[in-house]
Amino acid sequence: MSSRSAAAATGHASAADESSEVSELGFLLNGGTPSKRQDRAHAQEEQKRVLPPPTASELRVMAVQSAVEALKEHVSVASVVLGCCERWQALGYGPGRRQSAFEAGALPAIVAGMNAHPAHAVVQEKGCLAIANICSGTDESGLARKADAFDAGAVPAIVAALVEHAEAPAVQAGGSAALGNVCFAADLTGLARKHAAHEAGAIAPIARAIGKFGSDAAVCENGAFALGNLCRALGKVGHSGVLDESSPELAPIDDQMRLRGEGQQRKACAADAGALEALIAAMRAHENNPGIQEWGARALSIITYESTPLRERAKGAGAKMVWLMGLSESMDAAKKAATTPVSKTGRQPVVAPNGRPTGRAIPGSVRG
Image 1 (tube, rainbow, N blue to C red):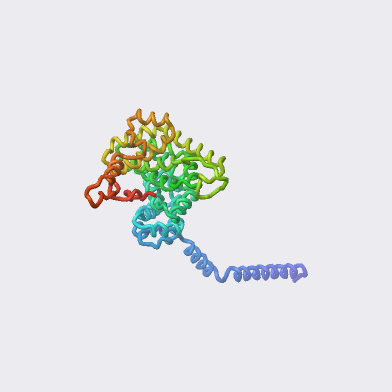
Image 2 (cartoon, rainbow, N blue to C red):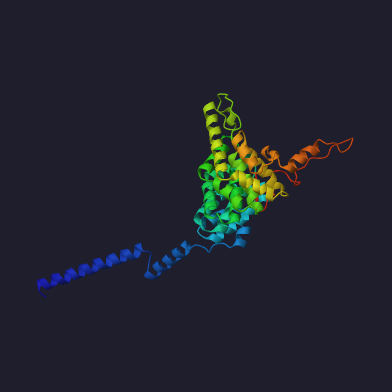
């Protein structure tokens, strides 16, 4: 063999050895034989595979934290959003259940579910009702739940539902209940929520819904409840020089004047949207419905407070004077009965016209 041929053979052997070493290195780095690598890759894919979305019956019996996690994981699945919201829609029978849902993070998860399915009317309805129920309550915990819903973006999500589904009375009723609850309270944070809802466009759709669906008791009652809460404002101005988080009347005078002006804006918006006429028509159409009478009178009184033009406009539309005083006729009769002795030893007991406290439960939600 020539020296040239020997050199060529030596070069081929070196290349083969190098290729073999590279192959062996790849074998070691990849964890074994090709079949083992395939098995490992398959196992990893199995681990990544998402479990099927839970059914409605499974969601009903899950621990609340598990239900919240399921909603987060399957937020793009409308049936999961519906199942969770229907579960929390039924929380009106116990504040403990509402609080556990709140602590598990249900409110941001519900808002995300509503935002993921804006065109799905039933998702919007059930989402609104779930928010309304979880946000019910006027104690410290209840106020914290309202603030959490607001911080989670509930107000723009609800307003979007009202606008998108203007022809769906169930969405209008649920959305009004939810906004009424989230925007309850007249402390500084409560007033801020009211005005943020107004700026998001909440008032006009509610007023229009009452006018459009005047025969629907739930739309009228929840709408009146919401308008009263949204239009409630700082009643009087008195300077103390002290800024107190819970008492707007103790804020510096400039802040009080600003809050009062914002309240006037909300009332004007309601009047411009036809709220006075819609409320009066609803109260006349549902004379035997205590809820519509009570919430309607409260809303009329709030909107027309200290405004002679609005009071005259309401009277021209058929409002009774007791309504503009914030009283329904049944409430007025109950107050008169309370002062009329029925025996020498006692007086007639005073109860709410419907036998229940003002913050009563309504179908699918709770107010407060």
